[in-house]
Image 1 (tube, helix red, strand yellow):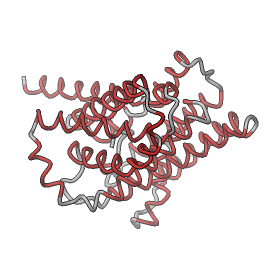
Image 2 (image 1 turned 180 degrees about the horizontal axis):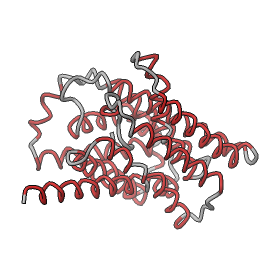
Image 3 (image 1 turned 90 degrees about the horizontal axis):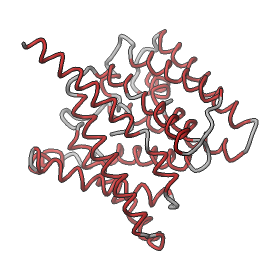
Image 4 (image 1 turned 90 degrees about the vertical axis):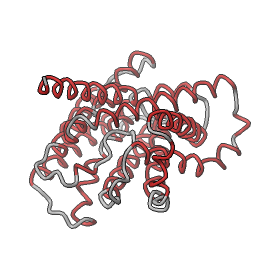
Length: 305
């Protein structure tokens, strides 16, 4: 019975992470439905997500569980800055390029992590890391070359924003490598969301003239659906499966984003997106599945952290 129970829990974990990745893949649909500035969108995404996470944790464990984390709030400033910057770049990219391009290029984050790990963390560069790097860079070139360099300049700008977002998120993984014991998890996501909301509050106040009840309802749904529900699902699933497997499953996010953009936004799926996206996914899998998992264990899987 114990074996069956363990197998069931593992499959449940796979389902939770996969569903979380699909939920994160809806972000492009929300951004396209909102006629707001990226700063305004992100403020309410993290603010409503923050509020929802507070309610969830208070019901499940009690707010007292957040008390030990408060002593690390200064340490969380840099992860909050990098996370906010990455999301900001990603949101800007969605306003200039296709959802498929933005979603796949943001997933170059593991590539930037392995590029700079030998320099920052003094880790050895493995052969499979070099292979993953080459494959992912070819994928990036396929997306940007096919879809941007030979067409509109605004699309290229959007691709560059997404690539910058991936690079920033890659640096976040390196910083999390040095995280104090017991910091990372659902409680840290509450503090992270709160800090990002606080940083973006001035932009939200300046842009208050953009306020509409319909827009706020969509932003409320965005925050609760993605940051509260999606992130909670991901953390619950991560407790049941290996980190490497979770890393692979989160690549469902750009795939889901591409399909949903094609269905709901009528975006055409180009050969550049298909070939380039496939190569980026393959490169990411090579990174996640490499034998040396010391760094992989600290990688922020998906876009939930």
